[in-house]
Image 1 (cartoon, rainbow, N blue to C red):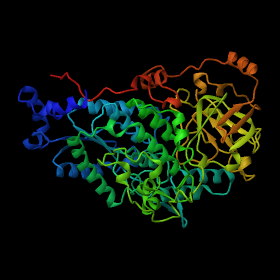
Image 2: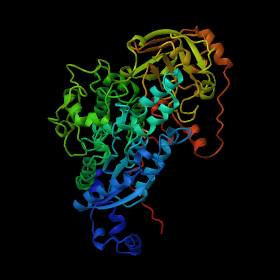
Image 3: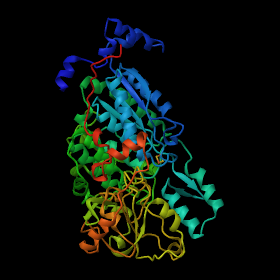
Image 4: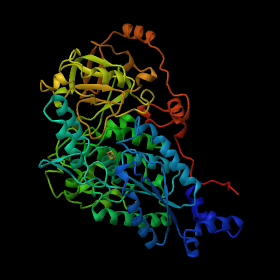
Length: 577
Ligand code: FES
């Protein structure tokens, strides 16, 4: 339905609550059993609070409390808040990987919003996949929508130093494997790392997505970095509730905010933040829901000459708490202003340039300037070649400069089980120049494109002091991870991509400045191997996994399901009675 038609029609919720017939009786009467007064149904905007709270998503465990602050804001602005739960996705605990369920959760969000009487939506999100899942679902409906993230945990503190979520788990794991850290020390660090409510406090995927919500313009300023337990997070939730009501009155819908310019701004911001590679698939999928023309090449083009400005783990040293005190995302956006589509409207009702105008950098150790950046290479490098015809990605700011141009012999693992079985084998034929290749971990292959693309360094090399190697896979990696890691190779091995053709000892060439990923094997030999390749057979014969494997698209298309691309819009004409 066109926006003008929607305006003429009045509030969407009035189709439920303004009726004087038996339908209206039913819609209102049952809602009143929760103690709502009649004036709540008098034509005020109904704001759905879409909550991903779950005890099984520890990063979102505090969102029920935060929802109360959203409700206060909605009431104050004259709206009627109604909270509802949706599928939550807990990164630390779900098997085989949360990414298998991102699209499922998005369907839940879309269906819940479409089916129910609401005029605007507040998305309460936190842990990695909860942000893209909710945004994708809301985008396929298109109501006025605002994001409130749960915020990062306080900085981890252990033995007198800061430790960061995920990033230091990887360091500790490798220290234990190298014999330089005891298991007792390893266990003691657990509670020291996750010591408050909130999401990972490194610039991992959760912080990246929460910050990119500011770049996309779908949250209020400072959504990315205010710590979860800082009372200013509650104020942000309150103000977002207020703003959601105003957005309904202004008919400021999600498609008006999430334009191609908004994606441009988010990609520029991601480069400056040294943000997670996972943002690539999430933003591509989100754009697909909105009909915004966004490609992998846009990621390379828009982020290529943007330096990394923030010194945050995993690319740097500091944590999200430090980032907030240093000025947070508004300070970075203000510094980037000349590179942004600064006139793009945000949920504030103002442009992104106006909303962040004058935001200052308070600590130059944490946030640097364009004139003196933290690292010259931000952005996401998109690689192509005979090993990745449809593209692959690498995060230069987290890679070793000396490995950005590298030629080495492949050591191949045929999936996660093979990797686990052999990576610690002292007889593994590997040296520091080898290229570790992992197959069958893509969207269909794993299934769900797990975060195992930063393959562990073999222990015998760790003991030699090797801390990074070139690694290539069709998997993803955690946003908290680091290294010279080529990810998201498309097409994946399970879809018959050339990655499946790599054999031990093949020469592989990585040239990040040249954006090239090449398997140095004659085409005739590759053709011969292709003929020998057995078709991938999914072990899943029923349920969501079967539907997912049959319909999931490749990484360069955002790993969405083919039938979820696009929007259904907000209107459902039929009733249930
Ligand atoms: Fe939930 Fe990192 S595991 S935010």
